Length: 355
Length: 277
Image (tube, rainbow over all chains, first blue to last red; front, side):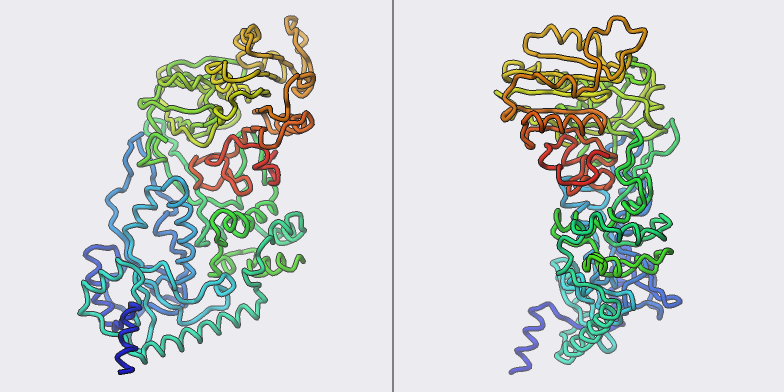
């Protein structure tokens, strides 16, 4: 009786079990409607690759891939207008199914969604890709030294923003349904799913606790403050020397912007051909000198340290005030990306402590 | 916004005429394929094929629906190309973008309009709008300034305005050209002609558009005169690119100039840093 009750509870919460083999069958089936991407591992680095067939380098668990999820939705460089036509170029794109997305990147999409979908004007390019997409997220089963998601109030496993979430247990996964789209998929391919057993659930809790502990240890070691202490850190430190001190080594490369899952700024660039009109949208970087400069020459952020301050202001002042969200996910990508060794964890610590 | 399905795509537009205003300012008369209806203070993005896009505020009467005039100073790459345009050339327009002056709320009030340099261009559109609804306002004051009389935009037209009974007008130049014998007006920066205005400052509306330095000092003067923060309208034209609050270039504090402005009341922005830069 007791066992039966637990089973019903698990099903009610949308918890199923899918074996690794069945998951590959599901991905194969998804290929008819979607362009399917999975994380693969090469030389200790994980990155998204188009799914072709089952292979050993596919890693569903582990930790976030090298590249942020945003690149699937607002591409680094794409044509957004051509010859005054009202339609949208590249309208033939197939919907995307992205597998193995981590919780930190789902938070990144929350920020991107706010900018491109909820913000007075919808961006038709982003909206189209995003609305058609299928997100099959997965729990982190390990953490790396730069992980600090817990500081931003996130867990190393997804709690929202997915269609289906996978938690690696034994030779398969607990599959949690997170949306109607996910529900429909689980129904359509019900022969691939089983009921999640109690021991699967227990295993999931055990793994999750273990990874949380790992992230906690990294946070402790690097003395990363919690977001509960972020309120007012920019205003309090606006005139502080921290900015100039931290910006000393910056080489203005913009890597922190490109690699960041929440950075969304872009440049509209017209092709230099007078006979046709073609407009590109290219990722931009607020660290570059001309970012806010106007044609007349005025530049509100002419000095590099002002632009570093601006980057933090945008993430830790603008977004919480306008969208009730800190535009940082604790993914830690900007830390190894920075050739100048500017460490966001250290900057946050200095800001919180008014050092 | 005229093209809701693709906000980045401009409307094909014919250049009807190019009028030379000063040595470095020209006015384009433009006829877009699809009508663009704008409110004074709203802006458009003008595309020159092969050169790019830049933001401008129309200088024409919003009541004239099929033709738009844009007055442009040559300062950068796009504007240099714009200055080489001829009648019959094809350009692109996106807009109207942002928020303009809430003229309905000016009803029954006294209004002081202060402009400097190329800032007189957007203000011409506002003045037309105020003239369109002349009976609605208690009194309108216009204070315009430029570097020298040769730089004065719409000088002949503004001199005609001085005959209007519904307008109190004064002009100034920072410096009088030695060879300019017919400049009879004031010499000095624009704040020097803002004294002696007889109006109820506490209820009055103040509007300013001009280079950042002029806006800064005019705002200080407005505050001195007794205008309320929320009645001071400033045109904050930053590096507006996408025009729809997404590309990030024109942020001022918690706003984007392109979608929350470009016209802001002073109370909204006074606590932000970098506003005059």
